[in-house]
Image: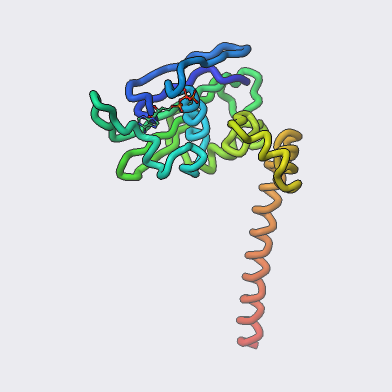
Length: 199
Ligand code: ATP
């Protein structure tokens, strides 16, 4: 699996639609200070579900929308799509190519798309569990992040290892199952209360 394409439009400094094509191997993005290199990484974080404006170096989530320049009016929405080659089926879907897209309007309305079909953020998250991709994954290492990992709490560091060895999805499923079990226990208690009132 590898990143084949990033498409951005109206995202941060990218007012016009731009398509970055990548090939298997190493690609470097170079450019003068302030030309938008980090915005490319922000675009990938954002499309993978980043919910924190701070992580995207903004004050609010609307800051990802092109804010205009002296010669150009602000835009009304931001759109990012990433396409991954999935011919090795590392992602648990049938498709050879997977495209994840996110769009947000100034009104706050937003949507996620998986291969062109509207989906929930939960679906995007689940698709990438245990792959190292995803907003919590280690596939994007930002400036200062290594220091943060090294000096962080052991429990936080453990999460990285869990992701790398591929047990995150099982832990999440266990958590969901335990929650369901607890809800059922509560229901059972209520049924028993009613039964004892009736008898
Ligand atoms: P450096 O090499 O200094 O780290 P860089 O190439 O990584 O720089 P970025 O930080 O990606 O550059 O881009 C910063 C530019 O993006 C700034 O010029 C900033 O004005 C612009 N920018 C950020 N958000 C928006 C927005 N919402 N609308 C328009 N331009 C934006």
